[in-house]
Image 1 (tube, rainbow, N blue to C red):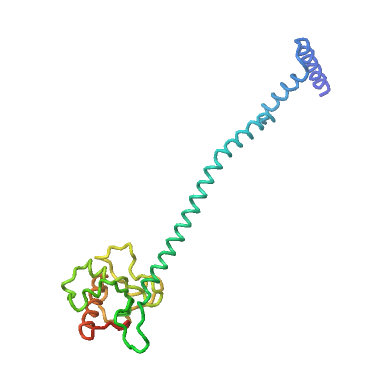
Image 2 (image 1 turned 90 degrees about the vertical axis):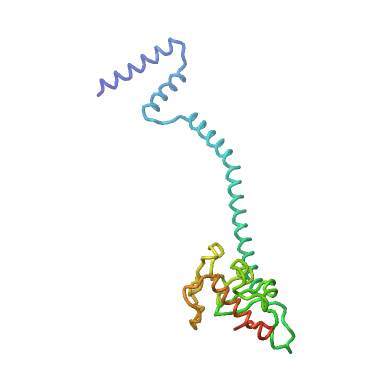
Length: 221
């Protein structure tokens, strides 16, 4: 081992002498040796680390505006969802609200805004009063019936029993509320399953007969 160590020292000294004779500095020799050692160990130098940091910094600066735009878009989308839910809530409240109430001395309401028939709540459009007592249910087309009667809504949670996105001519009214699970036809007065249009036709026929008999519509019946 001593001979090997002495031999290594002599070889190193000879290499340094050759390097010095060639007019090169000891600093450049040490740098070259360090490069060889780093290359053998797979280690990067400080200069390479600095270059990597600069590249990462440039990439970070490029991505920051993009991330800001994505965050702004996500915030705006969340605000839109909140506004959409608020509009839906207000529309539901408006549909469920009754019209102007009559003085306390009058026991009947001539034109209610919202009624309950067959256990379901239905909102009446203003155009309905131009047809009640005049047009029979068999003389009215499906699309007109659908526009005259809005809903139906669950009497418990006041949410739509049939979703807005369903095909109205073929939509079926479920026996229970799809939101709270309340069964609306507890008396079993209607055949099941019942389409949405068929339900509205029965409601209109009920209102038409009531209006022809008394020229009034009761909120509950």
